[in-house]
Image: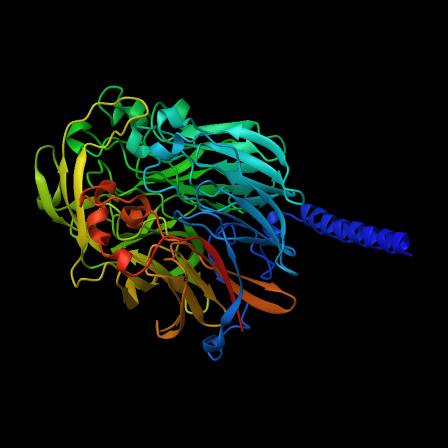
Length: 589
């Protein structure tokens, strides 16, 4: 009898395993774009190709959100900044921790760990990671979980077993190259990956790897000759600007790294992303517009060739990286429905462009304290700068708003389809900035500025706002003690979710910003909320684990006010409100 019972249990285990395999195998046969239409799942880091972060689920709504309770939790096994979000594919939840980048597959039926994978990495990456040992999540495609590691590896794991399928080397920490972004899988073929390291003179690039084999398909640099930047005859914009707008061969250490988020329009067959700051932070050392740093690019995913590029901050003198997310919506402007791209830049301006050709439709401040530029010239697309706040070598320029971390950094906004508002997490710090000469040496910091950040006007250091893209104005503002360094999620239930650096996870009414519910998590939140459905029930999940640039003082034990590229001074009191940690916290009614 005992042998029969054991055989029965073994047969049951095989059946369960086979069912799990069939679930993943069935998912492999469905195009990723179609999977993203299923609100029960969350199959891409930004939810869908348009990066809307808006869910059609509405079991949780304004009338009952006050009844949210913790459904389940799990430690991530890491205690640095958690800037990502989980994915839900079928009955499995996948997520990646901060360094050392543990990856987990969780069975949503009973919350046991199906598999766990920790990549072997070059520990030197820790010493050259600019702004904490963060990670922004895994990608999924063709039955594989795609993992970006801090030391520059791109690893494909079998989604069922967690076993490595292929590994690609995307960067070399010895040169200051690291990897913190989340990959985007396009056309079930391309794994789109960026690179970090702008503070080490890394010349930025975007790369496509073959989803099946891991082989490189193309690489497009952010600076250099047109053959490197993949700019051809069909490009809307100046040619050879990747070299002519630099002094000599400075473009070779020109920055423009690509560590933010990526979007895709299947109809136009274009991917969209932004490039970061030029190297060095000392603008006196690199005359010219320094293209194509600080640029929104549209590229063909099959060839990498650029369709158009729009540079937001030519000759950047403030470290206003242009890597924030590109949200793709159709806007009704002047009686016309225009396929648009909406981007809330670090420089404090909200940009709305025609995503077909890069034509500027609107550019306005989304924080009134912004003072480095008075406005954007709608004819040229260039900022009209205030000479008082232009930084230069040997001069300590004070009172610049926003600070280098911007009016918003990478923390992604959401688009609420019900109200038509963008729900935007923002920063509200200003800075003093003194540039100085610096020499390039591979693998060493290439910054050239001493920065000190502090709270902006009013004393709050962050806020979550609602933005009306048609009127180009802020509708409501919820001020926060610290930068709102995590992303937002909106739902059909009329709710927007976001977390705060002092550990509060909040639900507010999307239309008015009225707070409806909040819960204090074990550590501060810099992650991005997501929602899914399982067993007929809606869940909302958030990663708790403070860190990132805004909390680098606490995360790395820094105390000098100008340390952490100036961020330490602006959050010296953070330890009074939260401590380091790493947890996945999931809520339901």
